[in-house]
Length: 362
Image: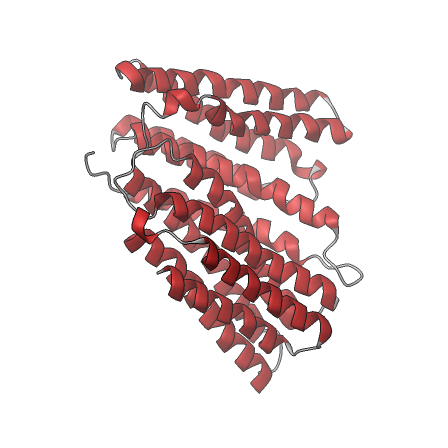
């Protein structure tokens, strides 16, 4: 497979998603009566999923059919305009900003569908079929979402997200078309790794927020220092796997990478939020422990799933590794339930888990 490089315009495209990801993550900082209410947890997911899918849609088009041509640049620049509209309208107050959010998201997805239809005429054989399938079917989800404009209350959002769900499921339904035009694995892993850096940046911002939250004491400095080691351990575990342990010659539809990373990204947003929540002590102990260890568990399971399929066969993890990691998390969670530990020790436990995870998987 010919080498495919990430272009400067793709990197600029990612830059505009930084603000969108940050807005989604800040939803998790809404605390009421010692917990983050289920309303805000749900809104976080509902805000993040369209961001992720809009980014994924364009990334996959570029991966399969994109070329650094003038026409392709124009399409991507047009998408940047819709990204700005969507990002500016992201808010927990859905009703107030619904129309601009709808225009931004649907505009992004419509441009991607048009791109597929525009290239399918120039492609041949299986690649032509793949482009036609995606370019024609994505309009189904957009049509369903468009009906939301005629309703108010919960029906509006039910139709919007029903259309998004159809959009997300269509590649899975049409997998038989996509496997015949496999993704460019090195490029796709590089693109998802770059988006992972954006999520790690949110954790760095959380450390800065901790240091700026009041007078610097030895506890706050210690907490920030341990959290910095935590971020390095997450970085080490993820990127050493991508760089050294995966077989980039595998040719697939890439769906394990695509859908698995949704849960990786959700968990990384939650870890970033938990850093601030743990330090500020605004939530009760049981919720805090469930939130932070639940986030780590989701990250562990999703990264294990994604990398297991793409690791060299002789380097894949065994069941005793799974038992070890789950056991380690379980021991830390149980100890913290029965003993009230300071926040820097709790984040230290999470850091130790990621150090062990990085060491044994890389």
